[in-house]
Amino acid sequence: MTSAKVLQFPTKVMKADTHRAELYRRIEELDECYDILEQLHESLNQLEDHCHKLEQTYNIILGEYATLVDPAALEVDFLTYSTEAIVEEGEDGKFTIRWGKDGVPAEIVKREEE
Image (cartoon, rainbow, N blue to C red; front, side):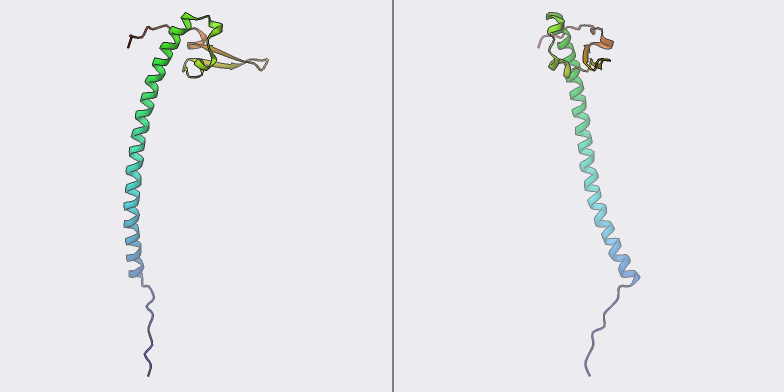
């Protein structure tokens, strides 16, 4: 007589145990992902705050510069980074760049010397 090997088919309990173990593994992985996302969000918020402060200072310096040069000589590159620059397309298809709130030069605030 030969002995035959009997294959065990997964039972409901075995499947449940396998899924349970997999769910715990996924929880650990998700927790790691969430921790990284939280760190990245915090870094992003800090960077946004830093950029906002740079923009404010940039606008003050640009305002001072604008009073020292001919308005027609104000470099377009400088306006590109100003949060107070207004770009409009005219009926003729040409673009106009105005600077300052509503196109009126912003109040010039002198910055403290560094």
